[in-house]
Image (cartoon, rainbow, N blue to C red; front, side):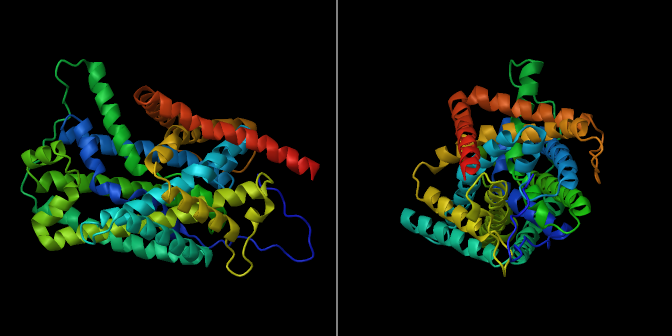
Length: 456
């Protein structure tokens, strides 16, 4: 999709290909396994009618849906390992305007909004250990964004190294909690998945399962972001599919076992009482039961490490959207600049940093970021459907990796996203409609840039 560099007397620096399977897997694991592992399980269990067996099934189905989507992305990424990810696939499968509509909402709100949200969540999670008022929380959030932007400015290999270190540091305590709960827990979970709501029909039961799966899918959010840096992977035709499958598979196992550890370590009555009273951090209760006050501190530190690795991965991945758009002359040329020494998209990184800081200072941050949820699911679904479209449009293009069980993989993943979209629209139609307004504005901006570059 990207246009060739303009002729000049000096060679243009390019992004470095330094990310391997381990580094690529860590980028996704870092983004997917954040602080949500400690509380999203409460929502899944609650939506499952407090059926532990059904909740674990919801986690497995959520992981399977995510894996099916990632297999589709693996084919697209191996076929065209360019920096930009979804933006590139939508541009080729549909039109450059559709790709830019996604890119516009990602550049303006989606990427910076997610970065701002996780940067604010980190100091809030530590308030129980380190008292902070609202002003200090925002100052810490801004400092985190600046620090990790600078880390990624000094080279993608530097950002990858930080990601690997923090991922290992955060996964070890999670494994400890899993081992303690699963092997030293004294309670037998209620395995039955037949948990029908009172007076409900089979349709109500299916809706309850779908509602629980949707909650689990929030925990897997971020699985699309490795394709964004495909242009910086070593042998992406081989390493991208492997990293996608490994990271999604590992994350699914961790989520299922972590929630199983909670069910083994805590009595059902305590779990039910905690959720009813808004005490959603059940993982903290498990650590405290086995390790006392040290367990509480351990969970706080693990949550901080999880959010740091998620923040670093987001800053690395999301900045490439600006770079890819500028390469296609759909954003101002400086955004395509690559630092001659560090080989990173420096202008894009710092532009993303500034927008993220503005969003940190925005009071209605939660409302702002929620606007992109609906449109994000729309573009993910369109990307999955790009697989059959590209097979018809470019049948002779080499495909080093092909989706398993095609076309059922595409059909099932598409149906899952249709359920998500339908549920979001029914629950909050106004926010869903507003969420489409930003990419619609992007279509207008796209036409403006096309006209600008035709004139110039």
